[in-house]
Image (tube, rainbow, N blue to C red; front, side, top):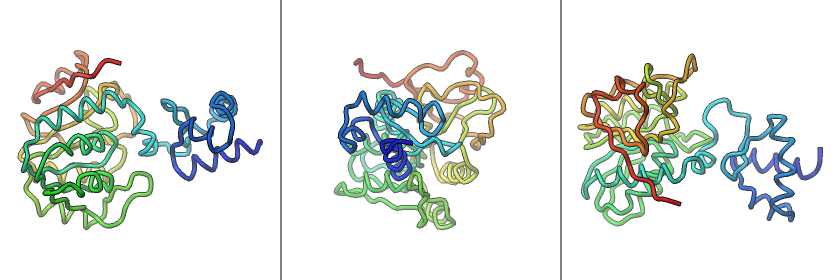
Length: 256
């Protein structure tokens, strides 16, 4: 094992995600050299390449949060902008954790005087330092790979609100099983947000619409009829029955 491989492994383990450019600077080598070094590491299953970033392969569930922020960037940005168009100034929203929700939080910075309840530290920090906003962090113990809270305090805080929109996300969307997440706690938080919302809004990129087969993912509670699905490309016809009760908004992506 070379010293470069050791350094790359340590960086990925520490940060979850690191770009080729960052590794090149840290190791004082070219980007091409970094790609050559990581190829056998990828082949051995030690790390994975994701859109110019190197991520840890140790998790069998979602890749680390920062890595997911690099995936489907253009699509998530378009979805987030479309979501922001649906939220008025002075709105009250609940926002879950996840990379798409993080993009939504960034897009919502154009809104004013929002009241936000979220279990995501990223979402909370993004929106809390805008004058006029009132942001409530739901929970006290943060999960290590994405800074999200799922303790009892999170549910207590969410339960004390009545919001205009619950803005939710999903790991995958299956035509029969619906909107899926990785863990029971994520399912439970989504359910808690649905219960206090006048309307549910699901923000999910088109790459997640696929037949997941017999995967271990968990189905979210069914959203009420009339809930809004925001994505950047129209799902194929196999999803017609799943989406029929909902309003589907297709966000336009920017070319290039």
